[in-house]
Image (cartoon, rainbow, N blue to C red; front, side, top):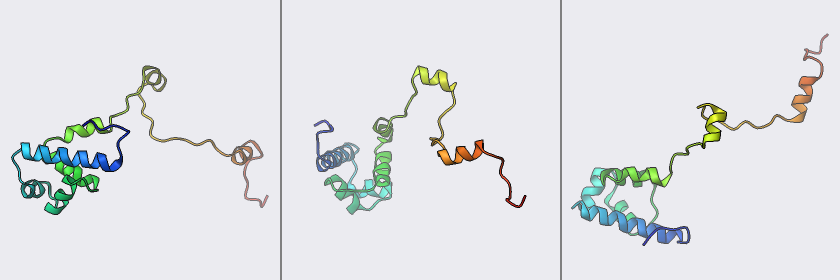
Length: 119
């Protein structure tokens, strides 16, 4: 079965757990062996294979041992800017989003220069 947006979260977890179990068996590993190499508890692996919730770090560790870590690149692909954006930025990467300054602040800038108020 293919994972699609129409599936519930529980169904997606079940499918991922089943796939991890299939890859573990294909690698000829027991649950204890995989859990030990990944640095997670055997019970944690049992829960994942049963489709229960687990942490992202645990998933990363399991995928690394099963030699499936490269699959994460497809999970959250790198954003590549389009050609127009590349021309505009000339290779510069966006580091943050700047918010426009408030009118009050810009109004102060256009008014008289700042003083200590003692003058």
